[in-house]
Image (cartoon, rainbow, N blue to C red; front, side, top):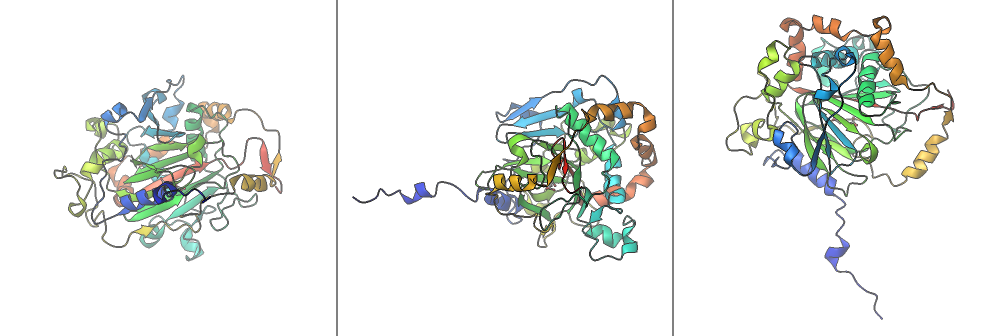
Length: 423
Ligand SMILES: O=C(O)CCC(=O)C(=O)O
């Protein structure tokens, strides 16, 4: 008897390239893609869509959020998405203007030694002490690594390749974690990505950390991105969403190991920039319903809407969308990795480098306690904000942001109670 045959279309029903297809779609310049399927959390009606599930957090019993430049958690607009289990999206929880502080940290403080940057290989060591002010270096800056330094080639962290994690960013990430119920989150490694208007970041998973139960926090500033979040393999069609300045993407549960990518940077609309960077008194006119980037932000040559509002935030000197070949954000081995088939084996292999230790209980309590008593606080966001409050002091950063997007992401590397064996 002849073996049963399957018709060809059935055999091919698994779309192994669903992720890549979406990536290519949103990356395309000519003709411009249709952005109507991109989830826009700034639009009030987004909560009316069946896939988006808004939720609220309780208010804080103290004013610790103010020390971090955040609105009270009860005011945060938080969302889940049915198509991306484990994703939590917090729409710009920062107080008006306070993103200025983080932008300054990213471009001026974090690139300083002992942190590593992509510039280390080809730059005179003395020029690396402070790259802010060096126009050529700032243009070439693509990434900075914090805490446990990520080895891009071997996709590993090492016990002896570690620098102190910035206290301010640690406090911010722990605070977000605690509000979302991750009381023991420990920020141990971070990557700050710097995008130009033509940058993309290929589909990848963040699988080098030893703890996959801990969430990954991703916080963005400046120009808008189209963010794709898929599933465990590239056969899952990703959900596309706009990530605006100040937005916080949290990847937990299944989303923690999901494929994700940035196929496109788009000009942010003026209202987003105003809401993010204008100081309290200046931002009184900022709109609550911010904008619709897919309608507002395209140059004439890639317009998909026939009547886009004219006002967009863009550089006076450089076009927001360049015609040149888009630059891929180069991070050796991190871009477009192979599907991980041997994850379980990999985790077992990795775990042999870890030892169990007794650690004290919730570090979030310690953080809140130390921040309540100002003596122990090693950072002063309000003091820095005072310095950034004149338009003259803010202008160089504002100029940089007109053609840039910054993303800082924070990870826990080791499971609670474990340290590297060879420490
Ligand atoms: O820029 C982003 O929003 C994502 C960055 C990212 O996926 C990464 O650094 O692994």
